[in-house]
Structures are given as structure tokens and as C-alpha cells.
Figure 1 (cartoon, rainbow, N blue to C red):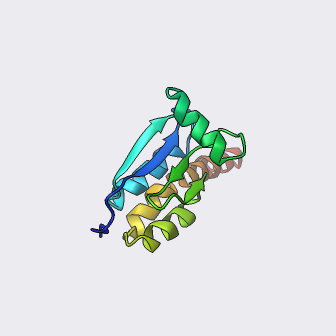
Figure 2: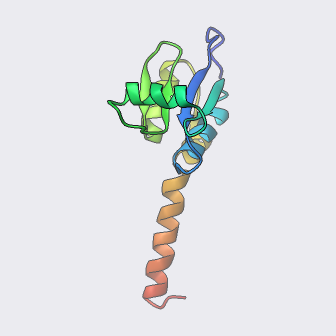
Length: 120
């Protein structure tokens, strides 16, 4: 459920090569959160803002919320907790989307182990 009192967007700072950006954006979409994505490799001011937030590091994804609070490289659980505190419902599908990178990596590792053991 969307928080009707929320008028500002969540800012999502990232870049194309960060594997966490896709799942974060997917979780935000699933929870129907208004957000704006900015690629810090294409926007110098955005890169400077990310460095200011993260002690000089260009750590992404970095999220800035309407209350000016931030999350940097959040886990799906951290982002879910923040969104729920703002009045959004994330649900199981949102959790799965937010953890998709880790789920995929687990499947790849499991398949590699099974192949090594000669199961298939």
C-alpha cells in the first residue's frame, strides 16, 4: 500500500555495473514507491553527493529518502524495514525481488556443487 502522505521521491544513486541496483529498484517498484534513479557515472553532482554521504566512497546503491535519511548498499531486510516504517507494504514478492541477486548466486553455487559431485 502506498503512503498517500509521501509527496517526494526516494532518490536512488547507482551505476550500470552494480549488481545490487536492479534488485533495489525492483523492490521499490513492487512496493509502489515513487523513486528517481541517477547513474553516478553519468552525473558528476550525483557522484559528489554519494561521496559526501559515504565518507568519500562512491558506494552504491545509495538511497536518500524524503526525510533526508539514507541507506547505503542496504540488504533487502534493511530496505524492507525502512519502507514499512514509511507506510509501504513490501510483501513476499518484494522480498524475493530484493534478494534476487543472492538467490541467483545460491542457485549457481548449488548447480556447480552438484556438477562437481557428478549428480548431473
